Length: 128
Figure 1 (tube, one colour):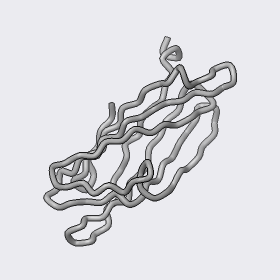
Figure 2 (spheres, helix red, strand yellow; figure 1 turned 90 degrees about the horizontal axis):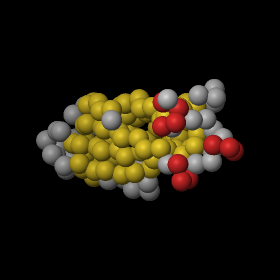
Figure 3 (spheres, helix red, strand yellow; figure 1 turned 30 degrees about the vertical axis):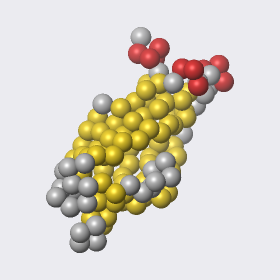
Figure 4 (cartoon, helix red, strand yellow; figure 1 turned 60 degrees about the vertical axis):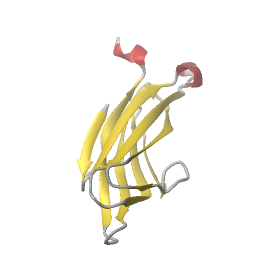
């Protein structure tokens, strides 16, 4: 698990290889990741947008941008957390992701750019 705090918001990420949804013979590897967003400030924040950088060890790179996460724009109260699970497909058995969330402090309407720490996706059989 990786974790980072930016602007009083903690982001933690755990990665899970999905062998039952992967097909190595066809160079298809699926990784699920669980993100926990914790508001360490004393004001509510709203997650507006996400921006991901995805690197595959085969040399490919892609960016994913959009509103919210998994179709939601959660409001996270002070001291509360929000958790979601998503997935990333790769064409090789390892890669990495990192990015940012655009969030809004709902008290003063200030925009926050919160860092999503880099995390690695590695198929377990690659670790041998």
